[in-house]
Image (cartoon, rainbow, N blue to C red; front, top):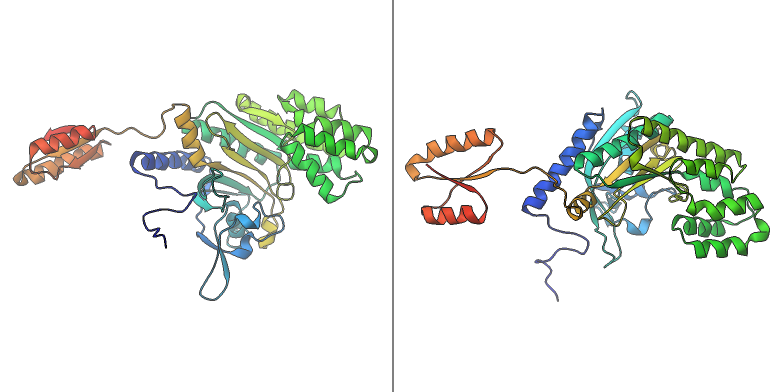
Length: 391
């Protein structure tokens, strides 16, 4: 039998030394971005009841949730995302507070990913939730704060793509297609699989009117600047779809008025999590990281599951992804500290300690030498790239 005590599970990692410090620095940058924008911090327990995540419109499939049994035989789950626990908190403990609620967090989440797919099972998420308003201004603000948060971390070359969760639904609601066919259509558009999309559309050509056929065929190609909205509007006469396109344009214009339009793109083929999201959706990409660096949107149906039916919007940033992207782009992240080793003879400990304390007050890392021999102390300082001070 293999003894696993020297190893860690697949999808996890040990974070050591400077990498650990830099990650904490990034989390602190994100925290300050939120707090100075009026958001209040919350922490949820690592363990939740499985029922918390077992909803029909859950953001995660149930097979990705780690489950265990407590001493009373109840099914528990490791926290699989932060939005759902925050929805539980908002729908129970915070329902009497003045709304809209502005909540923020930095926490680890746990997801059971397939072995060898390159994804971590333990991920650090950082984000915000605005609860209690269906205003377009709230959708725009969370995008603005998301952009500011990434900029404050040191990222420069990234894009936030915006779309609308209900746009696809509006375009296919009246079509004579079953749920399975609509889901195949959605997946092919979201993945920009043009071959699969053409096969589905032409296989059902007799059940799809010309206008719907044209815009569905073009949907994954409708990506780019704000002019994409006008292009899409000319392709459909669906009133609901036209309304959702106007919502995207309004959000874009608000973000543009903040001078951040260079970080925006429109993607009308973004149609993921159709049951979970209910309005404006967005996701961020950057060079050096393969997945979404940021994702979010409006989810007006979630908090009602916990007793207080409130509209909401928010985002989550992949903190580990930010760090990977910063490394790949050779950008400095985290603080650089001057380091000092203070070597002393035993009788001079008090003087050395006072010197160390004064240096620490100046933001300098001051380490007390544990060596009796000065040569060994100097060698240690050289290896660790520390300035050497002898008392």
